[in-house]
Amino acid sequence: ATATTYKRQITKYLIPHFGEMDLETITVDDVQHLFNGMSGTKSTKNKVRLVLGMILDAALEDGFIQKNPLKSKRLRITGEASKYTAAYSVEQMQFLISKLDKIKSDTDRAYMAIQALHPLRLGEVLGLKWEDVDTRNKVLHIRRAVTHPTRNQPEIKSTKTETSTRDVGLSEVAIQYLVPGKSTDFVFGEG
Image (cartoon, rainbow, N blue to C red; front, side, top):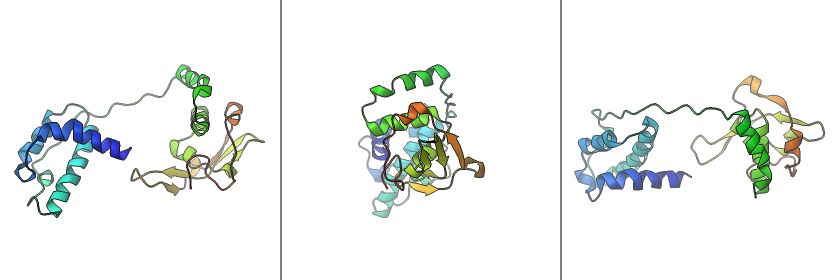
């Protein structure tokens, strides 16, 4: 996913803007023109900045350029605030649940059933181990979360808040999609 995102920034923004320019000729003004010419959110511009920064840092380290123009204090990157993503409506959630049988992968189907039918954060769902899933008593024991702070390596940690460590009722609908594994294994993901 990270590689796809980086490639998108390069092909959609960096190559069209800088084209055939030599690295050593890129100025602060050229970089500022890139960001001024972009529409959209500041978040999108920051993704482009990240990729451009990696390229220019590598060029600096390899001696192709003397200074990284992206580090200039004159550079200003502005943009619209990211838009709020509204929660799914009850009707949208019912639609998702009604289509569970259409999901081909057993793991994806089980994930959607757990995520859509229970009040859990993404990290809490990813943190579930089979020992936390009590199908007999219909309970999920929320004890940990798995996050991806660097977007690559998962990090196992405690729940977001002290009160997030809790027990949640397990939906009968979800139970039918669960294929239990070894108690110490994660329900979703490997290792």
